[in-house]
Image (cartoon, rainbow, N blue to C red):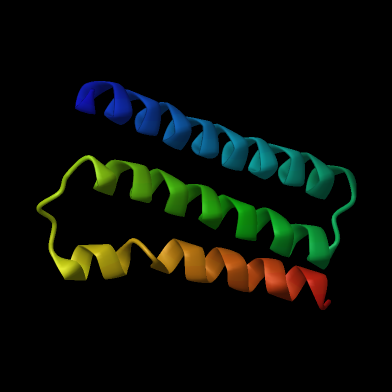
Length: 90
């Protein structure tokens, strides 16, 4: 039963990563069509969020990592959400 739960979790994590990459791709295409600072910030934000999702997925597979590494994995989320915040208020 535990193996099934782990397979479901991995599938769900990959779905989140695919959705994040999709948002990044859409925001990049929007930025290419209309080169505004808002769309540039949104693209950068989604790119960092995608990196954060990827790191979180990788980290979840290695249970014995230090707290320092877990702190470092949150940095892309902080940058990503910060850039999205900036894009909304430009």
